[in-house]
Image (cartoon, rainbow, N blue to C red; front, side):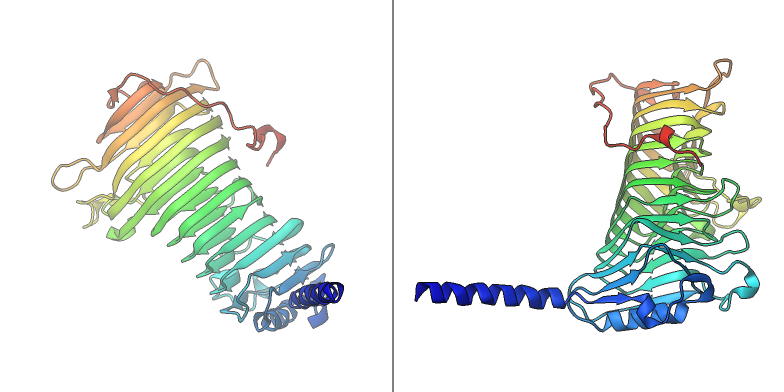
Length: 418
């Protein structure tokens, strides 16, 4: 009798497992009419596959097969979907945008590929997936996520976005990893990853080379961790810009660690518009390696993005407060003559707008031994500890911290060229 009971129990388990596996439906875009030759428009096939996936239960998976190229017009993948589990998208092949503006059927779109209100979304490229924006004729964001909570994005190569490569807007609990983002260093506004109005975002182990910010952390973002990033070319990892046209905007709890800036315009950067209000606070840049960065450390409270006399507006009597910023263990070389720039403002009541700036164990040298290194220091207070070059406007303190050993898991910046 005991053997009979055990047999029934085993059969029950096997049947249950088979049922669960059966709930993991796969939706291959080829089954919905995709051609995959890079010439025919596969947008409709992708949407049909997505719509079928979105009403499925279990853990459905949309598959974009490898070794094929799929041409897509601006496409929106909308939720919410019915599944209570995670929704998977496996991009194993290449997705490309149209080549010319004449082929773009919906030019009013702000983005090329948009995932909207899809929770528990997991997108994986498994190192073969490519998203190519054919960027030079365009002015659009390539891949945009809007209100996608519990998002996971990994293993993709992003090439030549028309504008920003990856945009994360109004999302909570996001992990981005193992991306390779590539655009020419003279391509305008091609940010690698933009974070806007999002919380609890973790970005790690990515290689990003673009014509603008490698990562930009913008208004409304809080609890953002950036780790093991190789950035270059590009404009560095930036908090901001925030406060344009007098806006009240905020960013807080941003921590950048174990990153390399290789030939970048900037390194650790905070930028706010004159006349704005709000705050950028509780920010740290730690264990940073510099290889010929032009402006390794910069706080710019007079950022105008190329606009002339923007500080002369009616909003110019206020400033976004930048406070509680720590720079710790930043080492390497620079390619210009100003290693540290603190171009800070005052408020209308004559109070400083850059407060409690802490610098510990900084050593920045020039790639040219003949270059005399300088520091710009305006309207800022804080402390320095074992910092070279000397930041004359900050108060010196005695060192009590021993630097950690380098993290062996960091990507090798010399192993890649852009």
